[in-house]
Image 1 (cartoon, rainbow, N blue to C red):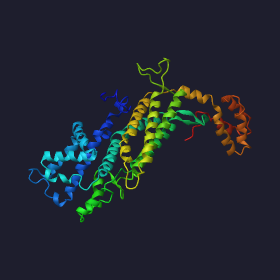
Image 2: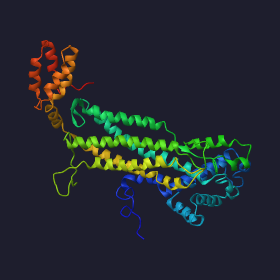
Image 3: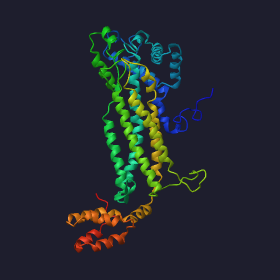
Image 4: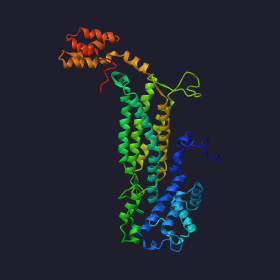
Length: 454
């Protein structure tokens, strides 16, 4: 059998791009899933001790350790978990043919090792596997996004913000429908993307990560039949909240995933904005508004030695598209389940790390690409110089203000003859107007470089 490494991996996220996604292994690998499941089971047991259940009032007695010391030891089961420990869980799974039950049995082995066998039947007490999965997986996603993805996105955002400030006074020809349009400023156009991303981050911060925690069909039946006097709903709400999640209620056996879909949808909007950015920067490079720093040793084309291709923006765009394809599927599929549950969500949820990985690849490429941009002001100025016709809007607006007859039509006749419109054309036209010299002076002051608005 071929051993797994970046050269033999099936997925490029673990192969070609492994260096850009390695930080996600602690969140989305099989080892990570086992570790997070173990974390939920351990924290649940500790929470039961905190009620305490009558049978857990004496937890730890005879061990020579305080409850607090034992809780520290229990938490080390997941905090210090190594891939070798996860391999033991997989070994157990060969017998159980059930991944969550294998985690439970592994924890029971650890209880035996620590000397806590008398209380091990309260591991996974009253729960179904989806109480663990639908808590562990949102927690994995939350911490991966907070610790890895959002910081990487904010690095790109900081670069864009700095560029917007640096280029705020650079006049630039705008293009609407691909045609020359009213001039703008380069910094402002970059700031559009900054504002869009900041708004999505604001919305993203308001989203909650849902967890289903309620037993076999969501009603905590087993909990209530065993301890009817306990307010299990409040307990479950508090336990889930202690993990930084929000408990979904009521539910079936599984979470309805509506709020998780909202997270995916917001990520997709962020990615869509970034795709828009990639395409705009790519186009500016093709227009020579930007050059790119040459990296010694890099090859732009295997055939054309002169080329420096905008590959970073192309790579980012492709990976953002891949991420959005998966996010769309996750968002549309997960909220749908037959009756109280079917198993289709289980295999699908294992892929929630895939769009995050493609997003991380894209953000790394974007950061690299933005760092290679060199402003080519000469090309931007030349484009403005070739397009004096764009001041027509300003001139006809001044004439409208002054009550000049048919100003729009007058400028339309001037600028749509097919002949080149240059500075002299505009100046000669102003000379023919029946307006005061002060108005003519005002109009002559309008140039493609000064007519950039607010």
